[in-house]
Image (cartoon, rainbow, N blue to C red; front, side):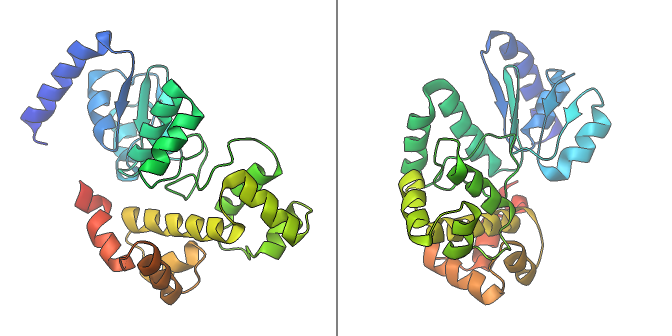
Length: 241
């Protein structure tokens, strides 16, 4: 977007904002909101490459780089391009409730994410249980420990259950087996790293819990019918900009 186009959008926002119940931005769109002054004194986020720039240019904004998206009053802002999916689902949930948002996520072949204030690797909230308790807490722990040994036996120990009972309860509460959940969590972490970093595949494989680039490639080809390299070429943040 050139300077003339940016100015036109900012002018339109000035006119539209007083009549809007809610305003939302995705990725670098928060920079346009910042120009209007609508974010002054508010918490906000944007693409990680723009965080320092936003804070330097607009010191009255409380810029945060951790959350996927932030709601401050009627204004919602999200991080990178992929976080826009999470923001959109959060808006659906805010208006219509968890059940409908989950249905929409399933129709989009996505998973409804946890609240935006929670830091996660995952682009999706993998088979969210929708309730608090040991399984929900374990889901959070898994997302924070993707490089750990996440076999059924180890996970069952975390919640003081037998492997058989744990598998039954986990599948009942989330709709996915523990093994599937772990694979999807690691896959989503790898996808986000491919989208937002230039890390080599070996590093991404290690960070996401796959261990080796061979394992990473095998899962990508099976689940997405793309190699990690092809996925990065299509969805890297520079490609989407």
